[in-house]
Image 1 (cartoon, one colour):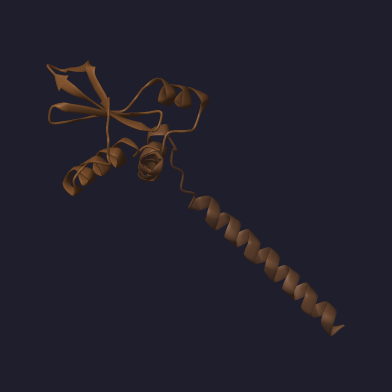
Image 2 (image 1 turned 180 degrees about the horizontal axis):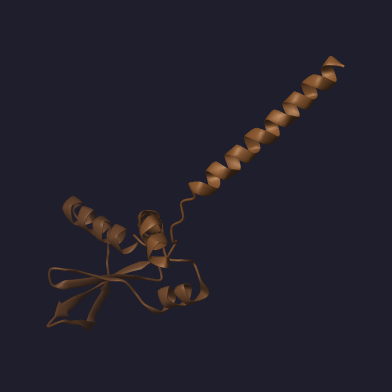
Length: 129
């Protein structure tokens, strides 16, 4: 009998507290409008970080563009580029490359300073790969 009385008191107190809590919640309802500009401002910090860390997607069109164009590095009056795993150099005059002066770079006969310069050029040209 005492268990039944305790259960009834507990049930009544739960119902009473529930009604009081609902009335209080209805009175203090806070509503604000979620707009597109609000969400953009809220998430802009995360979007900026994601854009900075992201590299171009490896798509079919991106691969096609990489295969169609050659990266060229111009140092002083010479243009350097890599094609078919060979480093080429040509004279660069008046904003154009003189294709008649194109030669393969021979690294075997270079001095240490020239070799370090050539290594820097090759690393810069291969940077994307």
